[in-house]
Image (cartoon, rainbow, N blue to C red; front, side, top):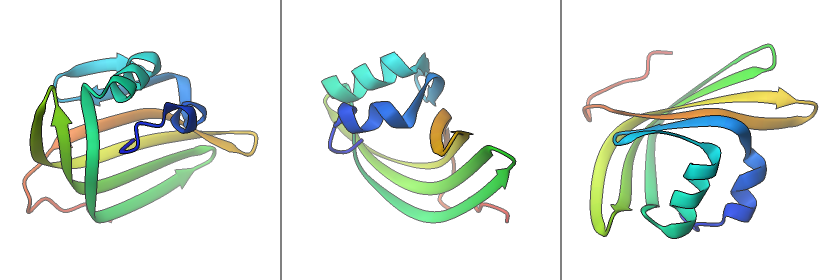
Length: 111
């Protein structure tokens, strides 16, 4: 995402995936457009904690991060817990959902 390389990202995202941000929820096509145009530029994510659970062909990944991003021309630094949901299709994992939840720096992921 930091490289804005949608050619590499497109195969990772399920066509019906949803992306939840502080300013709205949108589709895969819109997320790729946002990344490509740089209206949100995910510059750097400092990962502080991670938890992963796999249930059948579904994987859920939680990351507590400090995200540095450029949003509509302004740099912002925000604490998030990011929830990613993946589904295995054959031998390939596809992202179904990506949700950014704003949290305090003291937030912990219970494992």
